[in-house]
View 1 (tube, rainbow, N blue to C red):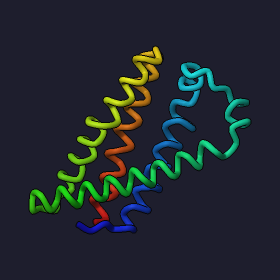
View 2: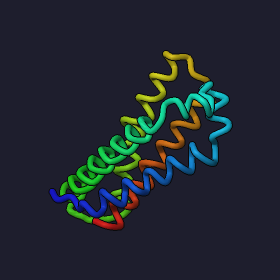
View 3: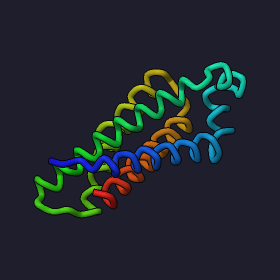
View 4: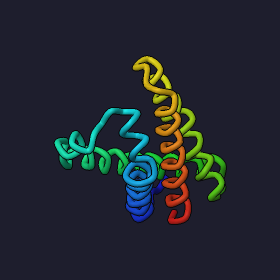
Length: 135
């Protein structure tokens, strides 16, 4: 098993860009409405949420890179499609299922669950694509 640290760094940058576009531009108004988090609340929180985001996306990139490497070894092939399948499987098996559970018990709006799970899907696939292209 080998991990390309360049791929991890690029996947982290891709992940941060996806998060920025998704929540900072494309869906920020809807997200604020559904969560009740105001602009003032975000300002009060300061940079801490961004630090948490960066660290968590970096960990996701490392795990995706490792999982793609393991899958390539297991199937004895190095394929971008396999890397995307790993990203999809990771999203489906861990992210989607966990988020749906939490949101159901916390009685979050279905629309918010769809926004967040769709973000996670784009995030996992985008990062897996970066890992696959640079491995």
